[in-house]
Length: 113
Length: 114
Image (cartoon, rainbow over all chains, first blue to last red; front, side, top):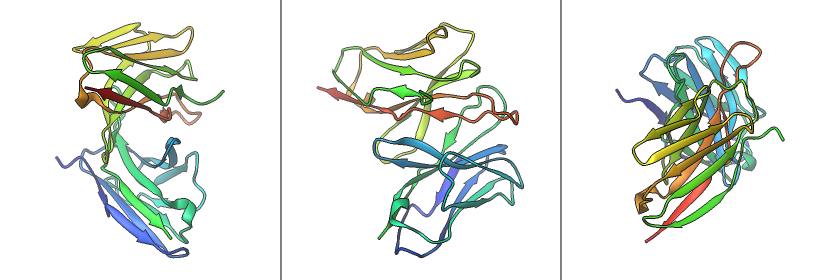
């Protein structure tokens, strides 16, 4: 199993450009999440999904949109990037069994100039 | 406050014990977790404890849970330089919709000196 993968690993955008980050998991997990990590701020939840076709807002959803058209994929979109969205983005997934342990992807480092 | 709280830095000498403390917020959390993040990588589960337990031991790791004070700690015995990383405490309270959405602390950077 590849676990949780994220595409791309790095990206530089200009202010106002758009992009989509792709997260894929091959563990048949029901829940998927997008976080951003900034120095000293820990992990902040952007959006999450409890199943195919459903999404919900997290702590910092403004400026982002998400879609979960397939169970294994969770897309994060930035329609008009701003410098404040410079961050490292992590995707995670988990199942509802056992300890609800989250599995994280390796991250996407995004810089908006 | 409403945040999961943990100190930001801890520095220890190789071979000593490390203790990382955390205060969580929601007593209805079923599980409490410690995740480890190495440089340039995502988080990885280190250990977890079920809410009806007081202690869990796993090789060099000991987790203590005080539900009355909502306090969680992680002790690493015989700390090694390879233990240098950021350690995140997390809880998973139920939401009004019946989901369990984890909440993370800001992370404690553990620095191990030779």
